[in-house]
Length: 447
Ligand code: SF4
Image (tube, rainbow, N blue to C red; front, side, top):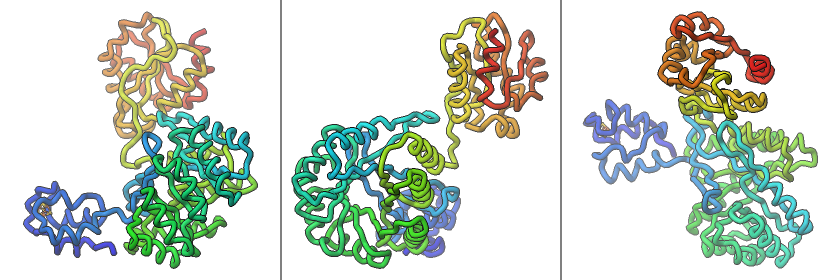
């Protein structure tokens, strides 16, 4: 059960010594209750109290990892119901199902599509993270061979092995246990044997239960057997059930401190209709799924889900930003255009993308505005005539240009006169408001 700030306060030394960086013990207790600090920050707390408080400072959703190396997937460790309360830690992993009843050619094609799903958006690599290998054949040898085939074709791609047959799981794991796959398929009926396998291979497991109550009992049974790394599936399949189960699980873990439900959730989004599948998967991303299973790879589906996931899992307290400097796009000469804008990542990547589309070599001057977009930075007094003029002056860029002209975003047209006053000898041109108008603008400017 989570402790309140007052309950935590009673266990602290109450000396208000400030060694923890907080002004008082009460302030520290309140932060600890919100899981915004660690109990380790207080050097004077007694061992007995530290023990009692460890529960309050441990994330209510256990962190579980599967896969190894750069592509290893971390899930859980979440502490809040809503992202604006703090942030979400580990983005929902997206996996694609491969059934062992598919032909080897179909399997190879799906693996190639998964590996090819990698795209870059606002400086981050986004991709399908894992493969869900489903033993639909019920054939031990076929499953083992498919697991082997996929692990050879996609070395390093985290695997989820789905079977509720302990002997089939055991056989398949012999060749891939060192890649730390997730073994999905523990039920109340096979729990003992599957636990033995998970312990032997030191791998996390996925548990299937009929609803939250049964799940709560099963996770406690596994915990008693020394299995701590679990992913849970209470079998919601419709959109309504997914929303209800996932919300109840997250609330129970975070608000009620129910450790028995404090595990990452796996959600099955497969549908015959790709659009409906994308909607179901979106629901999982928004509402607490840690792994999604899709039926296939479709680039448009990837784009929608990757973008949504990136938006939901961006830390709202830390604007995404790029370094302040003058970026060269193409091979600009002394007569090439110079554009100035702010260092909000999305602004930078959209503007630079449109400049690339224009094929007009350009210098892009990115001013540090603490990651704010143009209008927000202007309203906050960070994208002002003085700051723009000083940046241009101090950059020394005028030595590289024969045409001293700077293009500013259309949204801050009102700054043009003031910038010209502060940059004698320079011409200020007002560019378009939206980046998608840049290619036509630059071609006209150049011609
Ligand atoms: Fe209180 Fe410990 Fe912080 Fe000192 S370091 S103010 S004793 S919580």
